[in-house]
Length: 106
Ligand code: HEC
Image (cartoon, rainbow, N blue to C red; front, top):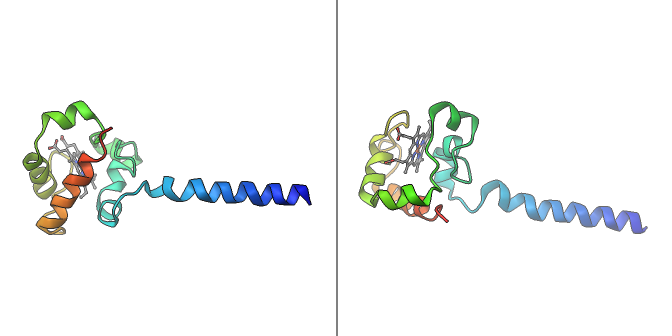
């Protein structure tokens, strides 16, 4: 009896921690188009991210060194091995992503 409820408890705890950790509050747009390289956490440590050399978007020092316009342009037109997204995303969606990227820096 005790064992059973303990099992149920740890199961619930697992579920509670797994759900937000898998998405970490990222938007659907980010998860669809960006997470494959930059990861849900923005660090770029996915297989594809490492292969392409995706930037660690959580780096606060780097974030300070670039303005929003530059980030918008990079997302729209691509940069280095990052593809362009202007054909897939609207300007508003790109602006929202810039805000989301900003929120990744601690
Ligand atoms: C195919 C892998 C890939 C995908 C998908 C991808 N990126 Fe990137 N991203 C990269 C790489 C590689 C870089 C580094 C580019 C460089 O500096 O040469 C980068 C750099 C960036 C930068 C920094 C640009 C700059 O001006 O320094 C931002 C911001 C960014 N990505 C946001 C996004 C967003 C938002 C998405 C989704 C719409 C996305 N990325 C999708 C690979 C990717």
